[in-house]
Image 1 (tube, rainbow, N blue to C red):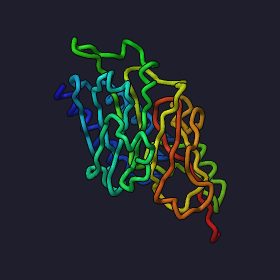
Image 2 (image 1 turned 180 degrees about the horizontal axis):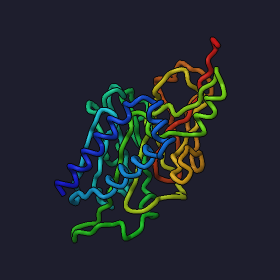
Image 3 (image 1 turned 180 degrees about the vertical axis):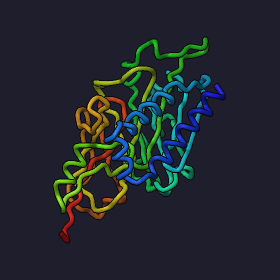
Amino acid sequence: MKLQWMVTESITSIASNLAQVKTEELEAAEEESGAIGKFIQAFEEQISRVEVADGGMLNIQQPNVAVQVQSVLADDLMRGLVLSLAGSSLSDLTKSNITINAPTQADRDDVIATRPDIIAQVNIPPSILSVISSTTLLSNGSGEYVRVIFNVFSTPALFISKSLRTISGDSEVFNRSANSPVISLSIGQGKVAALTEFINFTFTTIKSGYVNSVCSFWDEEVEDWSQDGCVLVSGFASSDERYDKDGVRCACNHLTNFAVIMGFEDQTA
């Protein structure tokens, strides 16, 4: 287990360093060989293999990537979960606090999103347990556990979208891009999809002045952002004083990598 954790720490460090590479260089590497997409797949596969003891966790925080793998009691999952990354800045996630906990009364009252230190947050409803395969539950004789993986990329730089590049490249005054951290989430083994009760996501935004929020997930099959199964709960259709304060909230009926696509129009052009 120790060697596995060391490998996971190393690949997380590489992911963090890659996220700082110039956009043009990342795009060139992806276009030439698909290297960035392949790396993301390898990164996620490594994290999915991480073993933690019942009730235990692995926490890794690099400047641009924060990862937590936690073994959660199924009984706790029945009450729902709140996954949070809190901190003062996106520039260094080593100074943030990443947690996976049962919801507090504030979470149930739906006021947690107003906290100014929330960088990324996920609210998982209790109904999630009903769609998790029984093969996912790990029994130790005293209870059943479910592995929850929560990681946040401070930037969407490693998720290179051809469609967004095309839209922005065709216009000198309009830019459309992912403008939030990327939240990645998995529970148990295999895919969790077509949920009857949506999972809620709260995103802080990276750049101000962007509008027209669209909740999206990274579709690995087409290697691009897609909106299927995701809806905007609260965001901004136009410039607003609340923009940087409240961020954007989304709801999706499946688990994978999520971000918010937004647009910016250069009024001076």
